[in-house]
Length: 110
Image 1 (cartoon, rainbow, N blue to C red):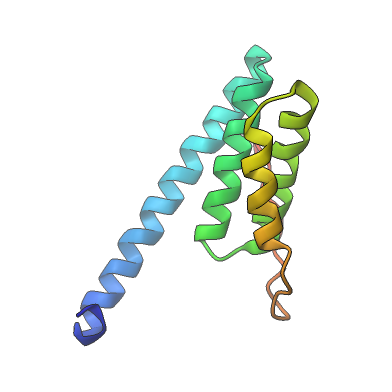
Image 2 (image 1 turned 45 degrees about the vertical axis):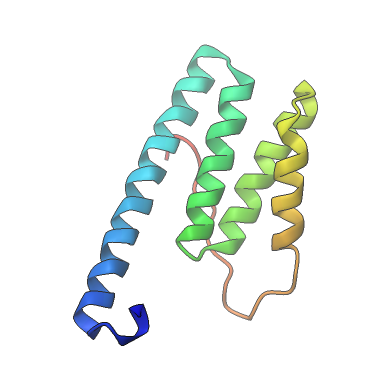
């Protein structure tokens, strides 16, 4: 049914989804900054994982891989159960990517 929708409607949906991803990314970046400020490693890792998922939703797989990798490192260091889920997400990203899909990794606080 969606495929039959007018092009303007599909474009509006893409724009809405893009703005929602951008807003989510903004909130995850703030959460990352705050978690670092208060020294909460688990919250920092959660925020980094969220940023990675936002990057994936925004079609930036290289950024997603780097951010999820940072989250995994923290989860493993603190022995959090969430490490296995992030590890699975990274494994899914490890499949070959088309040329030209590398991105610049966004960092907390930037």
